[in-house]
Image (cartoon, rainbow, N blue to C red):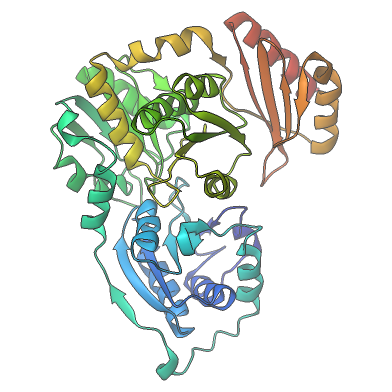
Length: 450
């Protein structure tokens, strides 16, 4: 059996198959989930990774052996598991996926009723402990749960299309890079309903990722779509990660659009549909985000990083929408969960209605807000280094500790936070001027790296 305790991360399960996590480990996780949460009925879906079919079958067997009825929804994007849990009033769900990780990885994203995430502080560690102790004896046949196959695609397509006015979308030329991930299966029934001229790239789901890793946050994985947008003279490029719950945009000039600017644009679109609502953004984000939310008549609320924290806060304040710098976008009317398809549709609607290129819509942001992006530095003593940064830069502005260390001055601000999984500090800094951004970035990095 392979079930290395380190595969249980802050927000999900992820490890190398079969050395860190194998089918026996997956079976035990299915049983442990049943024991910890005592659900009556759950959904299980999987991505296109090479081990996903056998891993999903093991999870289903584990849950059903523990007496749980399972809706097997087959090969789906992660957000379709969230949709199934909410739409069918299920007690929870498991997506067998390793998201954007390289091909040798396997994993799971686990949710409970209402598609609420199960993370390190909400049951995942109990699942870990239970799975490690599990003797693996199946329940008597009479007490086993039923397994039923279900097709959630038609309902899912209707739900995501309900976010936009399909008739308002015009025949834009769009390059879409599915990276041989789940977007290649999820998008065709949606694209069939739209007038867009889609240049479909790497739409064959293939867990060996023959073209590039399905992680558009890494610049080397964006080179293809940037070049393709320019070559095709496209109005927009959309790149998806492996399980397709995140999408990333490239404008008509081939320039990558940071997640904060996407959040700002989408916040304006959402608030136009429903004014005055709270909108959540994470501590790393550009000032462009709260500025845009206020301009659109919404209430900006800053939050710590991580989908578990954001989904919880969305329910607390009944937020309409939330966005993270990392490309996760959450919608109240999509089980308060993250979706990769809804932002893509909203962007198509925005460009269709604006009648102006995306680069032009972004110009006011790019001319005012200058961002470093996330800069990671390994450090030997995280707490000591954070204290040094605070002592050096705290006097320059207002200090807060929502998530790591935040310093806010009049014309620049930064967030420095430790990684959840390794001895790293992550710096995000912004200034109202390129020269100031570069100077403050270098000053802060000098302290972190000294």
